[in-house]
Length: 216
Image (cartoon, rainbow, N blue to C red; front, side):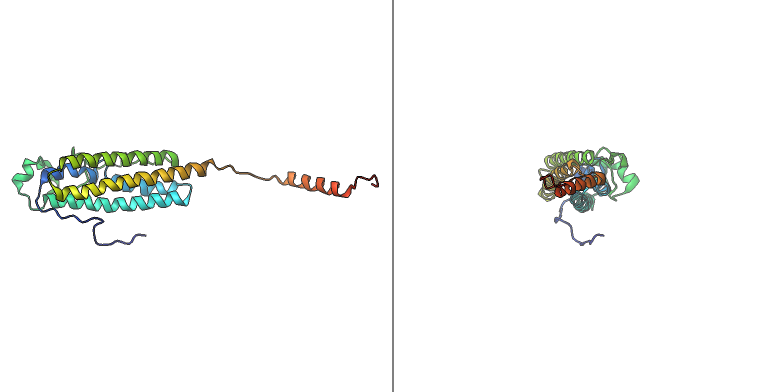
């Protein structure tokens, strides 16, 4: 159960529309390494984790990724809001405008719609967490490329830097979860056989009855 606060996790106030930048940034909304994929991946994987700590980490990070999805959608919306049709066409968004207007639609920068095939849920906690570590690194790398492309627009640059930093934090948390799961799975289970216990008790009683003086 979530509690929704009607504010963005980090403030976004873009003063000048720029559809060209929106075309690139939308990849972090619906691309294979974007926030929608990340949130669905982590919130789905959490059910198969072997301990409560790793479940909590996946739940926390998956929930935060939903907040990041909201942020990226807001960036894309503000970059296209008020843009002229000529600016949209010049940015290479004519086909996008034909299908979606200026709604925020989940797709990659190349125009490929979101596909759940990018989610990794293998039913193996180690494999899943390794995938999550890689996903956070890919997201960080994507944000760094976007930061390069948006270097002249501080209103866009600021929230992108925040999002990149959060990917680094998520990577660290998944590393913590992986170590915990590895330790959990490496624990040895010891079982005491009832028959052996009875034999040990009989042996102990016999020894106690025999004083060693030959009186028995």
